[in-house]
Length: 549
Ligand SMILES: [Zn+2]
Ligand SMILES: [Zn+2]
Image 1 (cartoon, helix red, strand yellow):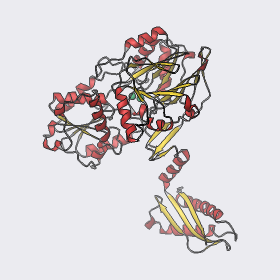
Image 2 (spheres, rainbow, N blue to C red):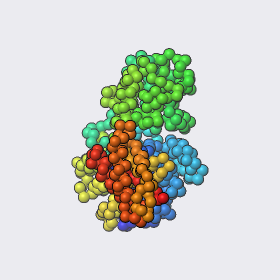
Image 3 (tube, protein in one colour):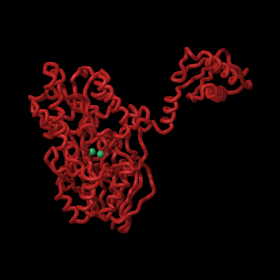
Image 4 (spheres, rainbow, N blue to C red):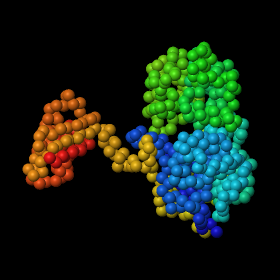
């Protein structure tokens, strides 16, 4: 019966970010999430990374829908790119849909996309699947996990979750639905591994209120709180504490302004009208009456916090007495940028709070005890850790063993390994894809490992280009060659080196009469690379242009 059921992780298994997977039964495919990932510091010039969904290309006509669990970038960031290629219906909760609409509008995709709103408790038939979203706590409201009943059995996809008994929006995880799934029998649980190396329980969002309260009470002047634009619950908490201190609040940063407007319109964010001020109005208020909510807690170059740290914001600047709070966890790879921003803020005489200096952030993900609770509530036959680096996935597998899931029923796999159900058994198939697709400006996928290696080489030692006019009949250069170089040596101080390099070029371009210019270029590049390495022990990128006279 279950012979046709197959699950393919396309992103988020073996890394933090770009979450995506497909669930297939016969000639029907459901996709869950389409996230993006931020580049690491050695991925030069890359804006962000998409999942490699090449595997789905020959299944284009079989995809019934894409289901979105929540509105974080690592779950919706790649959606516009995905929809450009696969025009399939999108299912999302109200708030998530609002966030998606903002993205689709930017890329002029909104009109052509079919969007459906689903809500916790709904039961939706899509082809042979029955989809039941259920509410989970996370750091953004309106997050769901998914129960997906297939002809092969019930699959539960946890999305990102934690068990928070005092969440900001007052809605705890839907325990009743989980119990109901359990009573029906769960074939497989796919569960969030982000915090699998954290013992115990993740603290409730509520604990932040105390930290914000204390910082706000002690801040002598303005308070600038930076977080992700999508952390709507965090914005609500800041608003609530701000109200208690009779301060006014301003929102800075385009994405935060847009998200705030949308979340207020849909009723997910409650900011009293008289509390909200514009950035221009701040100047008319005493400093200790002002809170500014800003983007850029990851040190992102163009976000508000970095502009403030470098004195480049058009409307605001850091002043003495300002207190800055970075209310977010630094995504691995962003540490250097974040620390640079914090240092610059201190240089400008601001007081800065960040985790773990003060408890100004709690994770939105389940720690080990909550992970065990979910497994115990559902008692799935098979268990697959998702959303995490390899270490998180492995550790989550261990957690599942501790609560009695047999080893042979736990599949720890990375992106691209299909999970195939055959005769009641779970098999791991041959790896098919799961690479990075880099986005650099308007280039999607054109920048690959080769280009990345060239960028590294250019970044390390710069480049040298030799330009030679060449007489083919004689096999000689016509006159003195020219050299253009950047990022290699400081030219005024390297005249001697460069003039010897010209001699090297001349002799390399003195060849057998009739030699083709292309071959002369190769000779020149070889000789020049060798010369520079001998002289400087460095390997600049060397190119040459040989122009036939
Ligand atoms: Zn999330
Ligand atoms: Zn996530």
